[in-house]
Length: 208
Image (tube, rainbow, N blue to C red; front, side, top):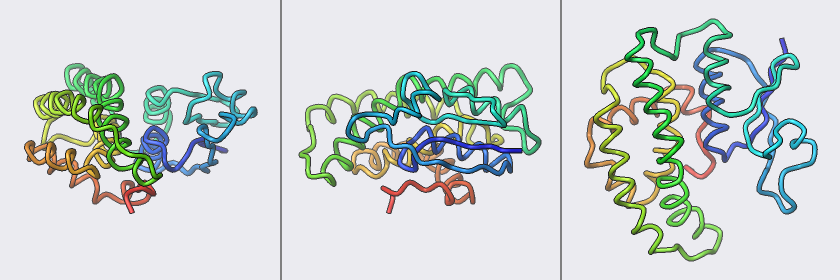
């Protein structure tokens, strides 16, 4: 079996795919692709992904992009601990959390707060204070929703693998750490996940 993942170590969504593969016990090779390089995504990567995004999974010639599709495929195609509940209501709740992370959290937590407060200044760019301030009410709304929807003591699912990489970056910003501190159940679940071997193996370079 040959399984390759094309993405970048700095990428939230590449990390999600890596977490899924590691938690399932699936061996893979990570091929670094920088879609933000000058000139845009490499031409050969556009043959894998017509929209120039990451990650892309290649399983013996079966190519798959979109992280949601990759995560569910890996969980269903390989042996290992199941990452999706069988119960329809629990599975729907998991999918709801994943959708929240994709539709609302990635923009607010990562781009509007982490990038502006942490990543940008590390690259010599002043933070956009207005953008951060405007995003914080949405961030608190997201955390409130996740705290209400996600079971504090339930089994690990794809929802955890979606939340953890975004929370890790969000909490690097002082505003993010403060906001998450108001939701101790959610913070405890995140801290427990951060101790897992998969989380340590995929730790983002920006986390230090």
